[in-house]
Length: 188
Image (cartoon, rainbow, N blue to C red; front, side):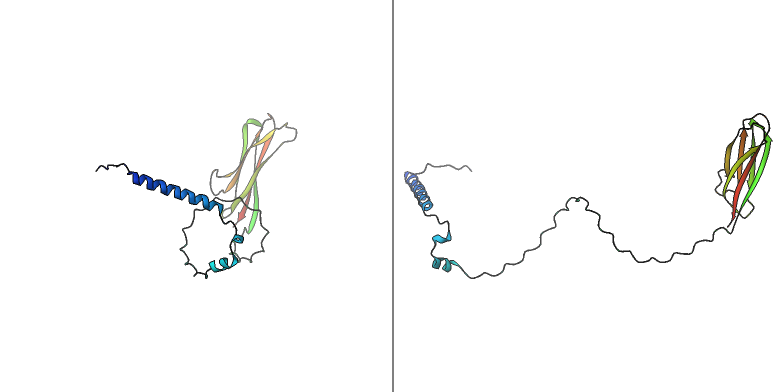
């Protein structure tokens, strides 16, 4: 549907113009008598304007919680607190080794860089290996230059060793080299 606009009549134009002039004149007049302070109002009028206190308004429903804010910077370390209560006594531990002994063995070979002296020593049955080591010595005056090449628990790579192995080389070409292996065994 199409709306058709008509031209306003001359009477309507005059009426709108009169309304505009009347409202402009009122606003100009009001700006000259604007009240800006209660001192401009008679005290008895101010007293008459005050009404009785109204009833208390109803409490509104609480709004939804807002989003969590960002983590703040860490504060300074606080004072140390009081010592806590003594804890319960723990369960009794297992008994330690009842007896520890060291066993040694030796091997003697002619000196030579390609001829190592190897010696193994084992713990007695019913004991466990707790440590071991290797050592050497040579005949006096042989010009020996020994070095320990190996000192490991036996069997190599086993989770529960039963002995110890030592391997010693001597760079000298004369004399004898003596390798020793020691193992520390404990009775559980």
